[in-house]
Amino acid sequence: MSLPLEGVRVLDLSRLLPGGFCSLLLADFGADVLKVEDTGMGDYVRWAPPFYAGADQSAASALFLSLNRGKRSIRIDLKTPEGREVLLRAVRDADVLLESFRPGVLDRLGVGYEVLRQANPGLVYCAITGYGQDGPFRDRAGHDLNYLARVGLLGLTGDADGAPVQAAGQIADLGGGALMAAFGILAALRERDRTGEGQLVDVSMADGALSWLAMVAARYFADGAVPRRGGLELGGSLLCYRPYRCADGWVALGALEPKFWQAWCRGAGREDLLDRQFDPPGSDSHTDVEAEFARRTRAEWEAFAAEHDCCLEPVLELDEALDSELVRARGMVAELAQPGAERPVRLLGVPVKLSRTPGDPARAPGPVLGQDTDAVLGELGYAPAEVERLKAAGAVAGPAEAETSGSFLA
Image (cartoon, rainbow, N blue to C red):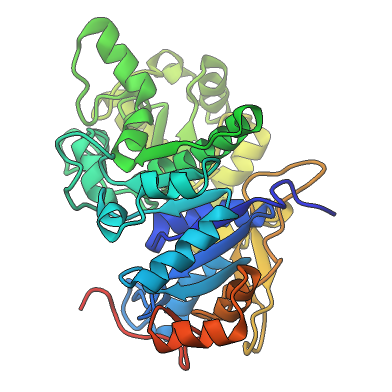
């Protein structure tokens, strides 16, 4: 079965999470994604330390595999004239170039957008940055937490009397960066189908994260009332829409519509709370609801929810979620054979389901650093002697002799 993006060639110069996840989505649906890595240690995520105590290098490798299945790898030194010429030659046959450097880095190397556009007018050039290609913060460093702080999302997350709460997932990196980049790339490719011309896709993770506040901002624009942490209806200010501690864990009640709240109240035998749906935390009714939830275990509340349709779910730990009936049924855990591994590697599956041409997360494992250098140079028309000359000059490098290790935090 053919995949929907077969024939789309992507040069991925990005590192770490946002660009890696963006090109992963494209690769899972058939795009030929070529990781363009440096002649040193390559993409940082190859040797990124797992951020928990006792983790070993195999866990670091899992981080790399989670973002880079189905891709190829070539090593190029863009600081050399010969390396830049290799990139320019690759660009002539590419559909997309993806990068995540600070604005101006590739311009200073002599392979910025205008140069690449001259080599291939149909190229879709996507740049993922923290704050965009222009504006007062274009050169500022940052990470997911910084972008969420700057655009107001972090400040709105949590209880009114508590500190801002960091999300477990990277909202700006993935939602504001990777997903927006994938959408922008596909939109630009669709427009190119009509005109034959490529364009620059400028993705700011801060812009993308701010767009997640569409409904909150709309209300502020309409009435001028400044929202505050703990005061958002969908952010914890309603007793019908909150997590609650039960006898042995937590559950999440999302009974926003009256029919769901009524179903919970009647099922719990608390008809006296029917008109208290939108009371705030700290109220007497909130105390009553907390007491009700504390009387039953998580499993008992899950059984309750199956009987009473009231938008109530258990708060699962990650291991429980990954082993759940829902995740298994939806194919959200995939197994991928990895050379040298005793058993298949388990990774998250493809989140978008197409009925005729579904994505394939098991097409190929993540590439060894530089494993495809020789093959790709051959595809670009370099003779074997030229390839060896480029290697001798340090412009390119073949497969790494040993797996990279270390920490970019050092």
